[in-house]
Image (tube, rainbow, N blue to C red):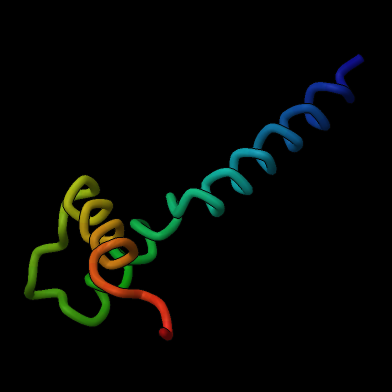
Length: 66
């Protein structure tokens, strides 16, 4: 009976990873790693500031070809 728990747990973790990838949650962690590696002297944005900047880049201004 111990077998279903690991299978169920793997399914939940996989679903969580898919959801995080689809919503951009992994982006902040990647951003922090990049800042630490390339710009260690500058402080990184908070998660809220990062999400606000991502939304601004996505929706502010014209983003179509014509």
